[in-house]
Length: 180
Image (tube, rainbow, N blue to C red):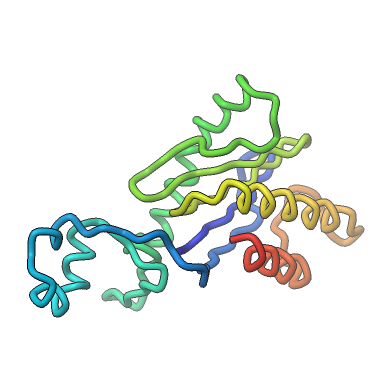
């Protein structure tokens, strides 16, 4: 399973992004195209049936022509970014209706669910994920917020600019391993 975290400044410019592949067991995925075939006939074509049925694997990473790599579920990085950006309108609509900082599942695109966390300073943490893990996602976003606050207290970090700190990145990755 893959998780994609984007931190956006109040002006919606990206200041940090992370792609995390979880080692935790995924929920079993059924393959609708292979359900009517005998088990012996699907083993050789499992990858093809997976691709045709739209299912994804947590460890999928296929090299495509041009040197790029296709990520989780066959989605290119720019498609993942497009999903996150497209969800901003929905996030702002939900922000107007709710006063909570953690916005559970605000949007869905194919297999991706978009969860968001809005800080009092209007910085947006957007997480694209494939599985349901509400408590883990909530804990992860709260811990990322704490790490973000500590990074913003650093006198060498300018607010609303790209976060290049290796310490910040390491702590976010550790939190992702812990909760996701």
